[in-house]
Image (cartoon, rainbow, N blue to C red; front, side, top):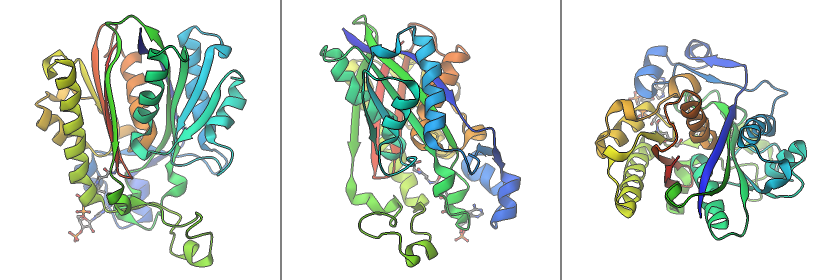
Length: 325
Ligand code: UT7
């Protein structure tokens, strides 16, 4: 038995922050944001909306489409860097709302690679028969952790959630290869240094906005391209496939120029590389499952198709997963 992705779902806030809105907040322009990132708008949670709400809605859609009972779910992994609260995990809060009381629930903090981390963790549990069904969610409300006075960071992030039900499938289908990696030596390329046990909620932390994300975007850009290209090639080499066999590449939606650079290194034509960054921006752990669900809903991916997903995020973390639907 292989572990396969048997259904997906996604959800995002109704609120929208356009490039024109950002022009009113920081010294930037629609032209700069569009040419440097490909982003035109991003969805933004209202003050009274929070991460688990979007996770629950995305998960419920995936559960309904999987045709399983809620008690069939034996583990819930929620990938998020923007939890509802420090304790309990957002996974547990989502479990409660879903009534998935036959499951273990937890969070994975691996930034934008979190969804592929979750997939990789549950894949072996399903393949070895330890569990049958898993719910993996990527959910973020990044806009509450963004410093809207820092133009080099605030323009890229948006909110949303995507979810997948994984379960046993025939051996020629499902997850054919998956790999996750990290390199903590790059910890300060994307980080929120305040608001934890090292630098608590002091007046200085709040004044410096050290509880918000700080990003060395330009340096991160190069590592992102290198890491996603390398792990993607590894996934193909390991399974003996080539990019010609792949129906769709779904990269983490970090920046359109990163996506284009990865596509060029992999020698994949533009039409085989999915992009929704113009509408959603960078939704971190939610970006791949949102993109995957959009592809499945629009039948850009159908049964039998080979799909290559690759992610990169703060930590730094990265990963690649090759799946036959
Ligand atoms: O999600 C996974 C982790 N995150 C990423 O992978 C993000 C990767 N990085 C990026 O997407 C890009 O680096 C950014 C979009 C964040 C920035 O784009 P860039 O092309 O790397 O710009 P830069 O940081 O090299 O800055 C170039 C110039 C600077 O001005 P000077 O020094 O050349 O005069 C910046 O001050 O652009 C300026 N700049 C802006 N100008 C207008 C930076 N942000 C903005 C802005 N509007 N929003």
